[in-house]
Length: 368
Image (cartoon, rainbow, N blue to C red; front, side):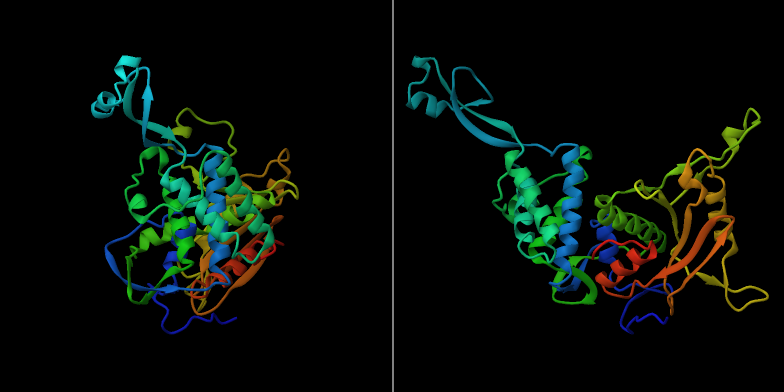
């Protein structure tokens, strides 16, 4: 099947990528940038609200499991003890000292911070314009949860948001806030020139390889976590060794998979290895050939983990996933009980089309 990349789609090497911002969004690396330039925006009301709602609700659910970040809010009160700074003028004007009181100004710890208010306001907006009723209900439920915690849905000003500073402990809020901000525009930057100034993403090939891997993992995490799937990204797996010498653990190389999907109810396990290169190469005897090194690597992932006590390990599926160049590929073979698939995804297509391809790759019955 010939890929439908348009002539104006930008390339990274030989690989057409219609919108690097979409990969960055799923990879939770939306803040990666190198300067600013004028870009247009992809305005697709049929797709963007649902995309942003899925990402925002998923990010918030993960944040709620670790508690929301707190902040300090200026507060004034008349107390019977000193707290913070004393407002001498107000204390003297009302002769508070004679009654054993003092006017104080202090910072009070609160969860009703600008970033949390922004997320609550974004959820209220998205629940009204998403196309799926279940997703709308998910937005409503999370917004109500925030309100019960003391967060109101009044949208903060841009000045309040720009003053927000992210520390090491709340760095994960960056992605949540970025998705919430996009929710009010219902637009995603594109690679085309336009009239609005926006950060320019780095197009370094090494970084984009990692972004592709993280974006695929992030997509499955966002879309499939609520469907009973467990997603592990960058997980180290062990060789099943015996009769080891004293230094073998120190010098033996480790195996690290890109993505492992587990569906506990059905017992399905899928290992995905992403490669930001062409799926084909040339050999001495063939004009096109699959890359043998990648096949050996996947074979080692699958066969080395077989364990009769771990039933899914006996029939784990392996997928080598590449971006499409000129054509879409979807081939497979079963080797010693393990299906190994060789597939491509066309990054020159729209976000909804990429979504459909990624879901079909794992043969998932998720309702789009």
